[in-house]
Length: 187
Image (cartoon, rainbow, N blue to C red; front, side, top):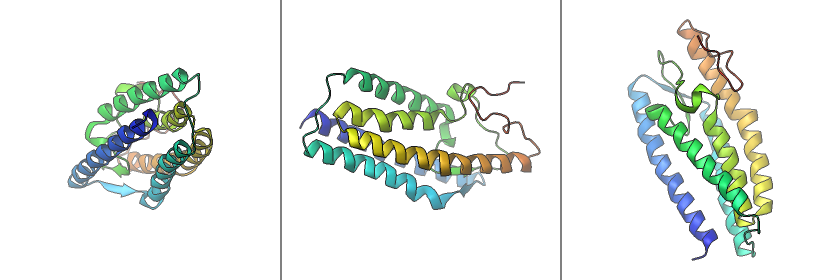
């Protein structure tokens, strides 16, 4: 098995394990009185990730090979992994691949969430760009990155922001509204 196939297998297994964690966390959120928001767009996220994997596989089958500058995307991918798992660990049971709102729970403001509003999405943006570049799958890097940005910035993040703003207003707080870019208001 070549390096490209091994990396795809590892990342694929990683994603499957994360879906199990997300399912367990969803059951916990539901037990806490939580509800899902924006479930209709989830298929877009799944589709982008599936196309990302299929695109890399197709380009590997077509002869894509890592470029001579592969250490740069490899480093970006590793840094994205660190940020993503720091984000997941910081959110704990609140982490999910879907948007869950638990009434009465305040947004998590620890770990990377102290510094940036959506670090997990930043990590995913970096991963979706870096892994195909590492493998020499340049078309996949370009197309999947563009689609991912469109879904995240155009649909996913706005849906999450609306859900959190509504939940905060229900709880009589609006402290999260002024925290869109990177440094949260402290105090």
